[in-house]
Image (cartoon, rainbow, N blue to C red):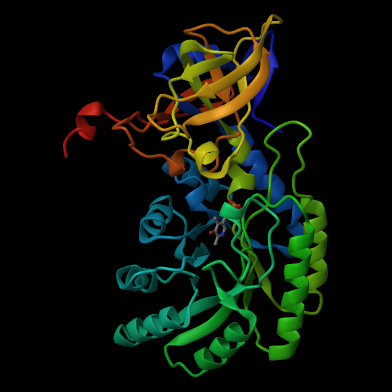
Length: 409
Ligand SMILES: *Cc1c(COP(=O)(O)O)cnc(C)c1O
């Protein structure tokens, strides 16, 4: 599924043609469908309705304040990985009792703020972190609710740079260390052990790794007899980036979780990111130059790896489509690249593509997750605008960065 559709030879997002937007706003820019965003969240919620999980949207996947406010309105909590994300979640109106804090490197300052704000759970990832949370809580005369992150040593069968669940990764505590730490926490006066969290990676399209996690959790619960109030299963549900690509079977996942919960008095937390925002946005970009080099044709876009890092960072593929349909084609070796001075600043290779010329517009689809949130000012280039569409209306939800602000220091 995708938020853009072809109508009378024009690609449209909801009821507006991308060409209309391209003429109105400075390219490149991100363009979101609000209807798609809401549909994704509500559909996720409905799929798991029988177990009523707490859904904490993973803010690192997209931290636009307007998007966070919309998700808050339809019941979302937040999964944050820094104090910046925490403050943004609060600013969007998300209640502290719907916020969980993950990450291997929380600083003393970050922990202090999380405790003072009384968030639902700080998910600790090491014994040292647990000790620090206890020490700060004592100083502040508080009893802090924490979760501990388990490293299940289960591979998410995904790209190695977004896999987090194996014992070779820095995340969480291995099975035996986890159990030993739980025992220690029970004796700490300023901590309340309420949660177990686990997140094995991102863009997982196979159900099997999730199944393995649940059966490991069953074993752990039986063995330890710890009464966790919450089990936080993280996010990681994979989407399809192109037609016919596999995506996670959420229905199956919900059945597995439902079976897992039988005879247990536990509330499930999910931290979905990509599956909520991934397909909600496209980047609209202009073809600056078309350059022939030997047998190859480079199509130089005005969008760069600083705006969409996933292809360079993970070898991810985003479909590129001309925003006006034509039946004529070009063929040969075609490579879409950006303007950044790095060889890895490239998006896609094609053997054929609809005929396109300099000054035409294209869109890069499925860019809503880990798109804007991963962008940078590399090459002293401004962060680009974000536009949101609802029906026939469009509005700016983040201004393109001003060059004058960029050159100050
Ligand atoms: C990144 C992350 C998520 C979100 O992952 P998605 O693949 O976007 O669903 C959830 N939980 C934690 C701890 C994360 O680091």
